[in-house]
Length: 284
Image 1 (cartoon, rainbow, N blue to C red):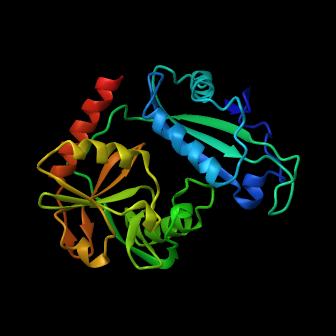
Image 2 (image 1 turned 90 degrees about the horizontal axis):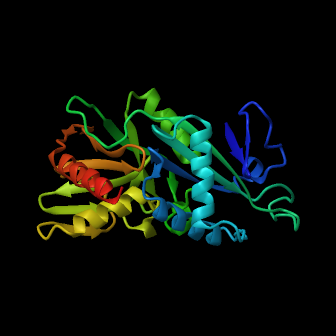
């Protein structure tokens, strides 16, 4: 079942038309959520990121778009799909409805839809036999700045980059900005580990304001033996790193095992994954 503006409908039913602004212009935002046994992981962070993104996009936030209202709508959708006592991957889509060209029509209004699907893993884990080779994606670049960091429906680079990765038997690609700094992976934020130093690109470089990124920065900041830095990463730094890993809410931490001729371990990534799972259990 799909939740369209609070109404549950069959997925086969038409609920978006060719006039929808999200379809026509990418005038839409989304959040990808992990829900386990009726608990939305990091819901407060998702909600406030969405609200901040709507403001940046100059969307009029409806009065009823409270954290409690949207949470209830998400869980309503999860339950309707028989996943309330299981693990679900949920996508919450927000668009500006219909009407207008680039400039929205005065009659355009905020619309939402929610979809839920089953997902295997309730908690985060790193498998010892995994392989995740990456390379730089250099056909196109993203612009530095906060607009590039929005979780919007404008994902052309991620789409083309994913096709490139598949064609070259890669597990993922790393994206560069116009300053030739490494910004993120196709589907998550990037962390670099060298000795006791952990580095991740700053939001100003154009990376996604990731919810999992925020969680890990908070966890690592409590370790007095670590030096955490939000700073630009040069491609030359990648092969000097001890570990590289990608983060997102659905998968958690995904180690990079190979970049060009350099191979990496994932000892640090495993330790942080354990701390992440501990935090989740304590907050549940």
